[in-house]
Length: 224
Length: 123
Image 1 (cartoon, each protein chain N blue to C red):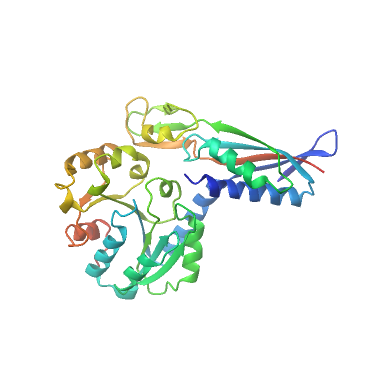
Image 2 (cartoon, each protein chain N blue to C red):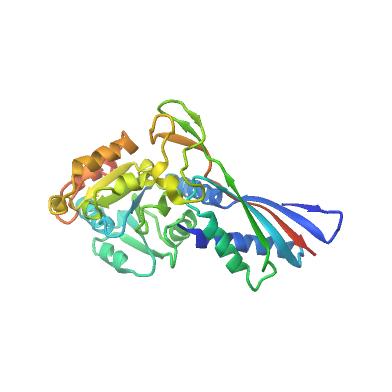
């Protein structure tokens, strides 16, 4: 911080030059170091409200059967509904309520991992707040970023929100069993995905029945 | 999309720095916001003015400069600004592609900042 006094000594400038968004990126890097140090694979699950993020995590946990070797940070505005749903699958769960906030940030994750006992944990899922815009701007330090959308959100989800999909390591199209009823062409959505992010794995799932879930497990390298 | 929380952090930083430097009143603040952030300048200005009320910064002028984006396209090699239909809006979200080849595969070199540059205060 630099103070510059003007000739009229009562007025002065406080030079701050502080980038408030850079702080999040810095904290995300610190979180990543912490995960690496503890040998934990961290996966950020982003996606719209109701796209099936919690169902997908439950479905993955069921198939992995790793019990308490998996930890989940469940982000939500005010409720604990998702955390309770996930807990039933035997993973360690910690709830992070953001209050009015539309996304999780690296600082909230840092605080959560400080509260959580991570000893013995191999995989950490972070379920972000349901939103296709803000989480894209706030990296958390995860190794992989998965974006979950569903056919019930319509045919234009990808092309309307390209930013978050550019950042994705895996794109999941959920509720694929409803595509016909919704008159949504899943191949067009896949084409949109490849246009935005040419090499991204695009996986069609039905999280409730488990269809496609093992592909996600393979792509994320979760098979031990 | 997260103007309220970012504005709250800006206000907190302004008030802390002013107090630390024994400022009695804040006259103005200067911010720079990148074109590729998801921050709407009008909303940020509104929230800062609102949150300043009742503090030593009430009535301070909020100056915001836009930092133009600079990208490096991984497909065609283009280096430069990004097409942005309307300034200070979310329009760029649908247009975050290379202006030369329309690829979405680019590296952002500039335009993701939200910088609190300086505060003008009076003793």
